[in-house]
Amino acid sequence: MLASIPSPSSNAIEIGPIDLRAYGVLIALGVFAAVWLATKRWESQGGDPLVIQQIAMWGIPAGVVGARLYHVITDFDRFRGNYGEIPQIWKGGLGVWGAIVGGALAVLWVARRDGHDVPGLLEATAPAIPLAQAIGRLGNWFNQELFGKPTDLPWGLEIDHSHRPPQYAGEDTFHPTFLYEALWNLGLVAVIIWVVPRVWPNMRRGTSFAVYVFGYTLGRLWIELMRVDPATQVLGTRVNVWVAIVVGLTALVFVVRGVRDTDADRVESV
Image (tube, rainbow, N blue to C red):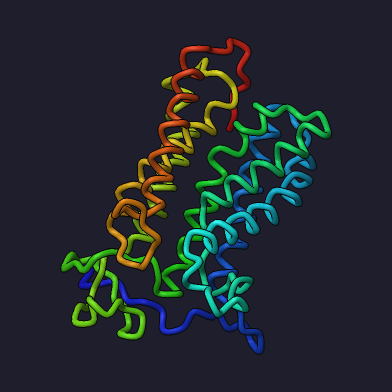
């Protein structure tokens, strides 16, 4: 039985004389895992694996820039007067919605420019993105950030005093919301790869990406409501909750359309 989950004593990983930020290392590992999975799925459709690598060269930087811009815009008060911290992504602060928009726009631009199969690319990348997110979320553990409300559950997360919000200074353990999201994303990977093809074998190609977006927003809703870190609010509710609702409902429309408007020649993916 767990008594609690300890937080790492440092947010760095030391390899000999090299001192690496764990947050950046885990994001990089997530990216490599995502490219590997997307390549496997693309190859299973008869695609050239070099296409995924080419697209990743554009999509990944665009996703990082979009993620940082979203975080800075939605939490601008944190950077007011400290503008030098804006590019310091190793300290945390990447908004997934910005990453999706930035990465997707870059991928679509490259795909259309070079004449690639866009629905096939959406199928290939649908489970790869939550896989990257699941791995990258562990970086929040090293940074002792994005945790939830206090809890006495056996898997409560120990947080150092210096990282606790003032109103919870007397609490010792908190909900590990980063872990909840990581596990949710891994479950989403399994749903897209194994469940969706069996439940909707003739679903329109490319709809798996909408399944990812809808599934992620469902998880993000309840996880976001548990978090205690400062965040911009609209009508008394965290802005990410509103974004999740709007994006999730939009994705649901595409899921329903994809299920109803089947495509008989769908290519099955790994």
